[in-house]
Amino acid sequence: MDPYNLPSVPRQRTARLARLGAFPQSPGPSPKSKGVTARRLVAASLVLASLILLTVYLREDDEGSLHAAQRIGLAVLAPFQVAGERLARPFQDAYGYVSGLVDAKAERDQLERQVQELTQQVIGNQTAAQENERLRAELDFVEGPRFPDDYRGITTRVIAQPATPYDQELLVAAGSNDGVTKDAPVITPDGLVGLVTQVSPEASKVTLLTDQSIAVSAVDLLSGARGVVFASPSAGSGLVLDRVEKEQVVEDGDTIITAGWRSGDLASLYPYRIPIGTVTSVGQQDIDLYKRIQVTPFVDFDSISEVIVLVKK
Image (cartoon, rainbow, N blue to C red; front, side, top):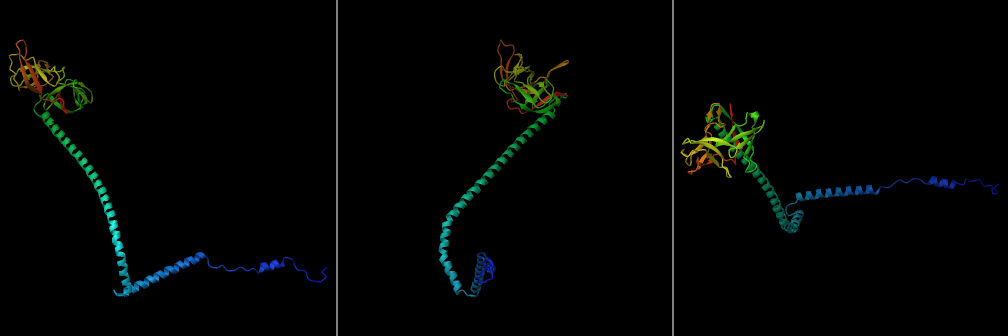
């Protein structure tokens, strides 16, 4: 029992009163909101000042203070602008020069490509025109009255030339499917080329007149002297007219053609009057049984591109 008879006080009252007395304070403005407000005030001030200066500038005459300040500013900045322009001009000129070179090079390349394309077109057109003219001539030759009635011509192109000077054969792009037969004579508008010796459905092999295996009955168109034409034993594309008796007349420059003989059911493989060549040399010795006659063929065997195969109707 308390001797002073004092009432008892709870231990935590003071702390509780302290907590009860601590009231919350209202927060102040943040730094972020202060910065936004300041920027807005500055922007508004600048806009207002610009409007005031523009109004004054428009209302002033040419002698006003703002116009004078403008003239002074221009006078001060003009030398710097001129200097800057002079310094920049070489660089501008260099850029323009380089840019011009690049553009000129690109234009030159484009023109070169166009020239190449046009050149190829011209070459193609010229080749086509030459081929068309050649084919027309051959067509006129085939359709003309040069062949006997029992023959017709098949025009075809050469697809393989002789591989070596000793190889006297051509491959043409016409075969049995086109009506080509074995032993059919082959010609060009210039004259006799040779004979078909092998036939397949799509192509045929032609043995040239300059091959040692080919022999053709021939006649001198002017004198009527008869003989046999075959390849010269010496190298080259020359021909020999053999079996011409010494009393027959053959002279330089005479034209030799196919004889086209017929005896009963037998007949020459070559129709009559196909040109063969021109006599270039005539020789004769007492001990020889026949004349020695050299013939130059009308056909250039090194540049044959198309031929005509004669087949019987």
